[in-house]
Image (cartoon, rainbow, N blue to C red):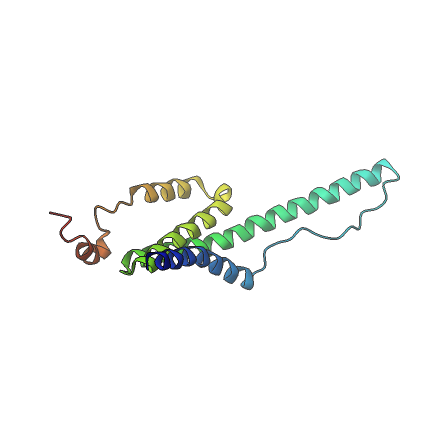
Length: 156
């Protein structure tokens, strides 16, 4: 029975972030490098320079598109991950709750990791601070009753 709960928890933890990512990718496809090879034969220095500029421009366009897509993933995966963490915390079933908690954390990590370099420094600071200040020994105010029911007897 314990093995079954472990498999269910790991399955939920792995499938939840994949579900969110696939949903976002279905709505807006991730950017891909250009497969066009319409560069001219490098017969002169001017053509070489034009080809280099074209390649740099394509690379810059791809970089901007990747940052924009990372922002979309961040705005989808971070709230979904946070909701899964809260939902996993509130669900009493061990396998499902732990799976949602872990999947939510993975979602948050993936959402933040892709967009971390483009996040404003203040949002980085607040995000890290919120993650570090979250403790299980005191309930969040909106979940106080649920927390008290779970930890009844441990608080004495």
